[in-house]
Image (cartoon, rainbow, N blue to C red; front, side, top):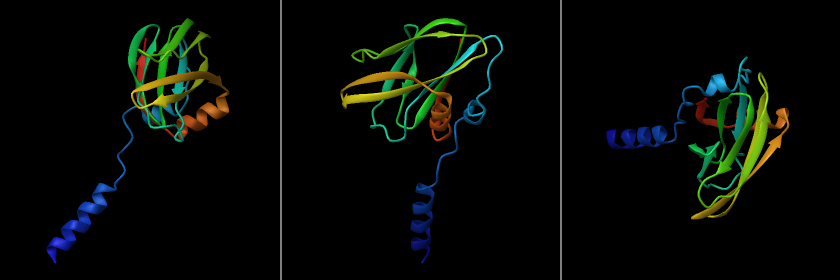
Amino acid sequence: MYRYLLIALLLLTGCAQLPPPPGDAAAKRFEAVPDRAVIYVLRSPTERDFVAPIMLDDEMIGSTYRGTFMRLVVPSGQHKIAGFAGDSGQISLQAGVGKLYFINQTTFGYSSLTGSNFQLVDEKFGRSLALNGTLTNEVIK
């Protein structure tokens, strides 16, 4: 009897959803930063399940996954977001103080060789992706 109860308990805990990471709720408030620009790099939950390492201004900042996003707080000016290694996808953007930008990252390829496409999207679409996603990393420069 106890054995069945233990098995049922283990099965239920195995299905428990993990809590969102620290900063997730704050990132989803979409607040501007007075002396910086905020860039969201977003991946749809319907994306293929590739890990996609990305760089900001030629510096590795982490990876995105299906249904995740990054929040980048950067000084105003020109910034480049790009794939890493064999991923030649990139986008450049002139960021303004107090502004929010939303970049949709889509991936393609095979499990060992992937590529990215980065596209600036409107705020409504960007917010919906973030609200339905999970924060993977926040970079403050």
